[in-house]
Amino acid sequence: MASSDEELVTLSQGGDLDSFNQLVLRWERPIYALAYRVIGREEDARDVAQETFLRAFRALKGFKGQAKFSSWLYRITLNLCRDWIRREKRAPVSQAPEGIDIIELAGEATPSESIEELVGRRQLGVAVSKAMALLPEEQRTAIILKEYHGLTFQEIAELLDCPLSTVKTRLYQGLSVVRKQLHQAGVSGDALKR
Amino acid sequence: MCESKELIVGYVYDELSSDERAGFEAHLARCTDCRVELEELRSTRTYLRLWAPPEPDLGFRVIRGGSAPAAALPRRSRLVPAFPLAAAAVIVLAAAAAIANVEIRYDSDGVVVRTGWARQVLGDAQPDSQRATADTATQARPAAADFAALDRRLSEIESSLNRTSSAAGTEVASDSRMSDAEILRRVRQIVREAEARQETAVARRLLEVVTDLDRRRRTDLALIQQGLGQYQGLTNAEIAQNRDMLNQLVRAATTRQEK
Image 1: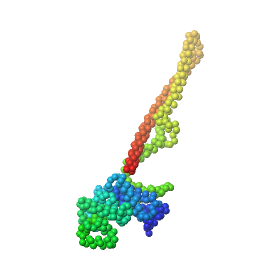
Image 2 (image 1 turned 30 degrees about the horizontal axis):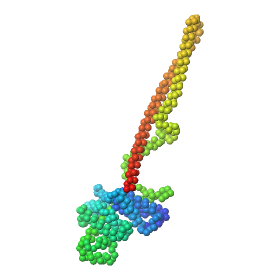
Image 3 (image 1 turned 90 degrees about the vertical axis):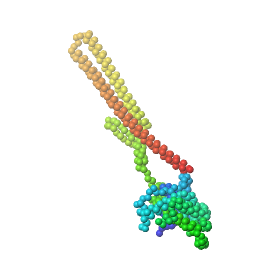
């Protein structure tokens, strides 16, 4: 039976490196995905994810368990992303694929999905990433934490150090902007029904 | 939209209390605007799910190194072009060769190329060209002394012969009736002295040939060492250039970090 995060954290704090590496293995993809969606660059997101675990490892003794381990990791990641944005002095970029590899796409297609549908889905994903890149950092982060990481309003508020109502407002405003951007990009409401 | 943003967002994300939910649903039943708004927010959420991040091979792992817990996660595997790697390898090899004291010796055994850490201290203290010049000078001194000694010896023989000849002439003039044995003795002496003079001349000529050969050998050695020095100088210039580039990169990175 797999150990919980809390158990692995306790073992790691006792010097068990394997336990910490289990935590790394468990959380590296969500952390990378968070960093990628916030800053929009694959290689930099990888660096941020790596640095996140590095810092977590160094600060592990000081982790008292007031928050969930995952929330603690998210906080470290977001701080690093904020540093990156400040350092780069630019908005996150949307890395659109230069071309669409039909062979690769065919491997991703579900049995009921044609290549054309898959290409359309991929293009919609690119449009979404571009729309998200246009959002202010606070709105984008709130949407990412809610949509892709399933955090509650309360967890987001604690993570971002802001009131609950602010989280809801950021989410609403962010979703509205994305919707408008998609409309402007020609994505109609029935795009997914084709 | 007539209801608050917080309420509709809470409903979209299913984070309303049961009372709030019931109240909002009652409102939705009679408000078209809120129903449209809700539908658009939901469709936007559906689009958001299409944004998938890449799935690279991460494989992060913390390893312990030395006494302190190592924060040595494997760095990302960058795609490094092969040419810079090859150039770096050449530079490292050249630097290693320079450090390893490549020595080219040209002597009676032929050309000998040798590398090694052990080299004479005096030799290390001097540049190759200076060392070659010093060697030549050291060996030129005995050669000059030999020449001087030979010259002295020749002069002695010549003066001796002159004395002998003049003495013989005087004796012949004074005693024209010299015995045959005496004449033969004197002829033999003259022949011996001529042979000695000839041997000395041959030895001098041989010494000149040997000296000339030695000079040529040292000239060749100096040229080889000069070429090697130029090669090492070129390599050092490349190393300095690469070091400058690295320093610039570090400075740029530091500046960016400070910003």
